[in-house]
Amino acid sequence: MTRVVVTGATGYIGGRLVPQLLDAGYEVTCLVRSAWKLTDVPWRDRVRVVTADLSTGDGVRAAMEGAEIAYYLVHSMSAGGRFEDTERRQAEIFAAAAAEAGVRRLVYLGGLHPAEGRLSSHLASRAAVGRILLDSPVPAIVFQAGIVIGSGSASFEMIRHLTEVLPYMPAPRWVRNRVQPIAVRDVLRYLVQAAGLPDVLNRTFDIGGPDVLRYGQMMNGYAVEAGLHQRPIAALPVLTPWLASQWVNLVTPVPRALAVPIIASLQNDCVAHEHDIDRYIPPPEGGLLPYRVAVRLALRRERAGEVETSWQNATVAGAPSDPLPSDPEWAGQVVFTDERERHSAASPAAVWRVIESIGGESGWHSAPLAWAARGWIDRLSGGVGMTRGRRHPSRLNTGDVVDVWRVESITRGRSLRLRAEMRMPGRGWLELSVRPDGGGSLYRQRAVFFPKGLAGRLYWAMLLPFHGIIFSGMVASILREAERDPHRD
Image (cartoon, rainbow, N blue to C red):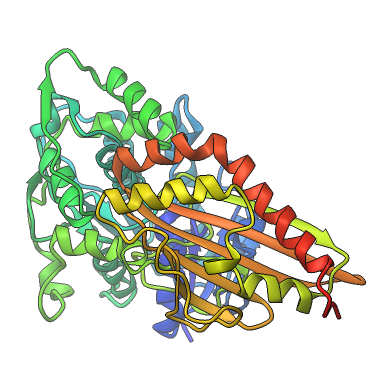
């Protein structure tokens, strides 16, 4: 079995490449600086993890021992300062260690850039790293990719958050520059198959998807796939890259240290100048994914209404476009939650009886006027309101209606998940669960809201002051009723 080393396995591309390599039959060693970041990934027990430091070289040579292929997928943009010097030094250490260990192939993922003209520091650094690897004794494949589209990609997350938050987008004039985005699954396909290319190959390959778009077109393509109105974009000549990065940092969760180099790179057209890779790795049947299809895949979990509980429950890796536990906190769909838990002297069975009888004639255990008002607002806006009640007073099944909610899932005696069917700018769920805790039980309650655009964020912010009254009141009332249950176990 061919052994490969992957640096940057805790990063966006590396974390998605590892399971693809495993599925392709490779033995994988992950060279990481912080091994704990891989604790919860689904493939942790299938790889060898080696702690090493590319800044000093400590442990790098040992991690390469016995490997035939080495992937270089690290960058230092978020470190700030002179990240170009850091990236150059780390690439030299990596290449030297690979040569000493007898590695026969290096693979690197850089970025598309113009053949001539002044590059941003971000693109110039990526190009310099590629040259270092190509000039090393070990043959290298250097992919130069367009903006990678998938949940967790910094460039994609910037598009996501800007489009969802801003109904109108002031932007630098170079927002009209052309880019060639590529789906993350196509990038991973190239990276995996690069391991099997002839050893004599030592060159760059441009890779990009089938669409060449302006950045503004990408934002509006995202808006269409996310069910939002298209965003008017005003190109302002006075908005410098630095000012634009401050703006991005203000209205999105993408860190400024990442936003600055990404925005600066948009000053250049980033399109493929050649398609030589097709001679060695032909496109898949049906071709590379178009931009909007890639966005659709990145949003599929949100569109399907999936609500994750914890990554510890994950057993297999998802699609490349799906989020991973190693992704940064700012990546992915914005999700607002209100979580509460409390111990009760009542048995789990007694608490469950109250949970399963919620709604209808039993009510919602707090602020009845607030619930009634919300129902009337829903009716006035064309929704179903609170008039539907429930079919059975004490028993629920998947699919049952409970006032403005519907039972999405139920594990009898343990947990109930309700999906909101009221009219609101987003999607919401209410989860109620109970488990044994000492001589009593632990009750947990979680409200989850996926906002849609700026209206969804404002909606949550407007209701936030009332959550302390409504949701804390629910907890207290549900447990109080369970503790005085005459059938208390």
